[in-house]
Image 1 (spheres, helix red, strand yellow):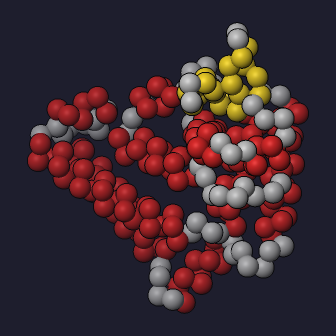
Image 2 (cartoon, rainbow, N blue to C red):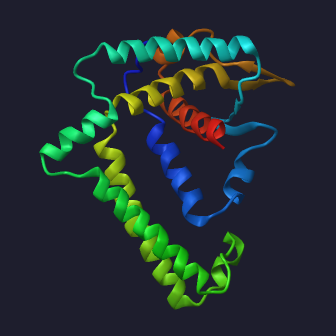
Length: 215
């Protein structure tokens, strides 16, 4: 499986997933996902991302993942996450400290939520006292900054590179467009997918495929 010329999808997907986690809400997902698909419109054309259904599709994805894994493993310039973390430590950058701070902020947010008498659902969030609400939003913003920093530091780990490349292949397999009353596959090959000039369409498809598969 060859790489796309630009890195797409993971940042957009991460942004949406972080929003879902931060608001403790399933509403965003329920709005996106319809019958195991995520429909969307691009340039006036109806598209959708769907879950892989057939054994053939799943085997094709597994084969692509294996090939990409072997390719990455044989590239000596790419570090596994564990080794990349050790490399950062030699430069005085400690991922474990970021993780500890993120966990601390999670605990502080949970404690503040419990002060209201219960862990509130997203639809009840607006009814929290303004002072408490402001404190929670501040904690979430601090956490968001740390999560983004962590993601940037580990972006080029083997594990993240593998996830990104597999997400692209997944999007290729699952992207469909409306043709009359039917849904048809958009690209006939991964080569056609990776060389298309519709970069914005691909970015959206990759992001949504990552969200659907992890929902």
